[in-house]
Length: 433
Image (cartoon, rainbow, N blue to C red; front, side):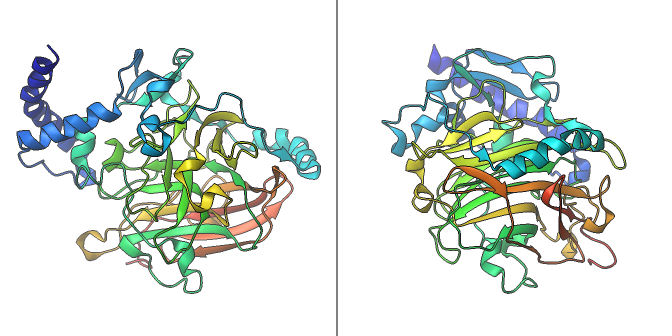
């Protein structure tokens, strides 16, 4: 019976693809979608085999208003545990010790919390559970991947992976040099040699426009260790991104990423490979964030915390008001098995230079940093976790943008937002040809 079902799936896929491609062209014509060439049954079979591996059988399924299917998968059946390094891994059941806020920082934050709420619209959440839906206890929500998702990627191998690139921090002495593979940034980064055990920030959420389907725009935290000029860089990342190629639309989505070999063979976005272990039944990684900020209107943001559990050594992710999402097991890493050596916060876009001109893909809100609150995108309350598992405001930071005529960044400090910065830009313009 199972074989017959799989056979019928393969027969139906070409028809589904034809319908999908026709709809995609109408829906995403501004993103330069092109009609897929004919896909061989052998390639479709390979894709389906891969999808069967990462789309685990659900206990229950929700359909989000944006069209996503969110599968509630038993937590012990999630993709993470397929990783060869995690064969004997037992899911951490005791919650990690949350980082403590240093008293002075806590007092300042509490004193100004009402002012922050007055300034902003509030906290952004996710579309799929706007009516209170959540997965049953003992399961985790996983955004279902489709054949169409894979076909938008360069290849099955590249599906869910970042292009290998030299990290920006390797170029801090030459800020005018373009980053490899068309990646452009506006970031703040730590410059002290202290041992780092995590980082936190609150990231303003926007809906930047993307010119070409294989470009993206994101805002995130990078927690890094290893050498920037070799193949052993370890990186843990989280934030929001707009990526038509990865998700098939232009909505900002919560994402995670990890690599232990400088983006070469290990790691992936979200749960598209084994590695990240999810523990939360309400937050779906890869799901759309809603609401988003409006120009001169309400501002919405998400808070992300990444830190190393001082007892078991796993790297945990917190979302919003210290809600635990899950963790990257320490077994996945080499350098990060000990600690991090650098943190970066900021924006990144891919500039594929369509028509041999700079892309019009926006970073952040599409406004430059100097336009300020309500127009420019911000990342605020930049904090570092130290060896005592304490959070304190990031002090020794520098900023960097490769091409300030296209995207820029300006940092500052005040009592309400601690260390923070505005950043972003429109991409192509008379000053950014």
